Image (cartoon, rainbow over all chains, first blue to last red; front, side):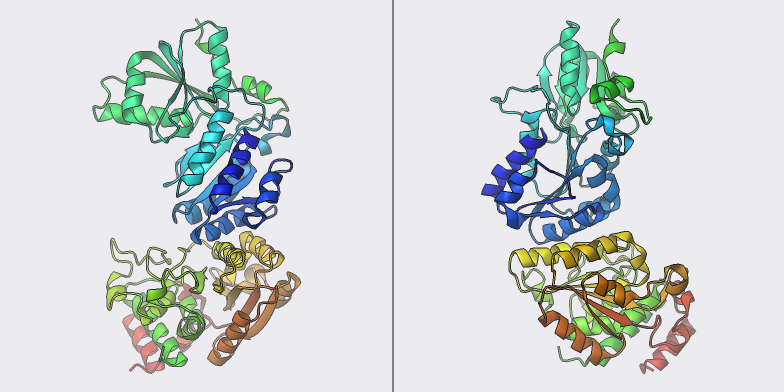
Length: 303
Length: 271
């Protein structure tokens, strides 16, 4: 999905001369395609993510749509105040890209685990948080962010994600929308990011006829669609490769609770949140191993 | 502009004192130290005017000393960026855009600041855009001395030199006092000029209250595009122009009383 996003950005940059790509000295074997083709709209800022974000704002205020690329916590948490104050308050067209969502860089340790970013970025006004699930969504995310004016965050897994969407279909890819991946009943799995594919496999392997939705944009949900899903199922389950506190599942519970409180939802649905149980996992391990260690599985739902 | 620079600077000081007095706000010391620098920028060197606000080749100022807002607001007011009387009435009033750290929601202000160590990096981005698009504008930034403690500034200082941003002019208002003590006692910066030179910047040190020296240095820096960013180290006095405020840390916090304002106006020749 990392290469899909950058390759799509290259295609878009050929047609849009406002796209500018900055990197924090990462992107070997990924960004060369952009750097070689658009040298006047590429710069390696060095290992200095606060400055990368500030430079992006300066470029954005001169009319560019600037993408900042680094690994998970470096382009995000390391530059949090620049993202809040310089990017979001100024409504600058800066798109923060983070590669290595969740445990994608599993064996490299906690420094490289991006497991708090959704909570920290979704709370900032004006920020649009996007976590594509597969290469098809990554491509759609690149298209969306290339034409969107304003702050954005794209949380990219890494490589080797399975397709959950048919590349030939046209996705309803917009903030607020939940994308049906599998239609079913009783239980609706709502997941964000690359772990959607994992959920789909589990549901199919268990022979369950549950619904599965991919939720590529966190927050700002379409109330009509969320209500329809809530009323059509007995249980909603959220799944994310992120801490429990404040993450994607929290955003769903908040939205449902707010709707229920003002009478836009007749009854409050049961919601089960599956996320990292607010802990660091300091052992080495593959992405699959660490997901399992954190309990990011639907196994506990089975009777 | 037809106002002499010394008169421009005097008006900035008087307006800054008046605002801090009537709205009971702080940071007058740093506003007085930067007044002469702003007078030269807004009274002479910068290509800027209210009707050039979106002109692609206007000069840009990214004002990192967001807390010393009254001096910048006063300079913009003198240049006609705000409706007459709007600043005095609106400053920190409920619902107004005149916050006590500078706001980009006001005309003539490129960037909101207040958290330190942000403007230089953003100025680098603006300067980089100017280079990439071969536009003629210059990018100025005014930094406090204390905020050079922030690591983000040193990331930007490395970046500007490496990327040969010779359209970037950083002015350090080196008034030697930061929030809780002297710069020397908190985290010394010396040799400051040597540090910038070692980072491949072109450096000029001057008396930040000598209007003709500031004008000359900024004009030279603006014209000289030889691959190096410019740093003007302006040695200033916190509280400059009001004898009892000069060099006094307390005036980072205090707002002038009625008697203080009267005495300051006498010293500045308004009364």
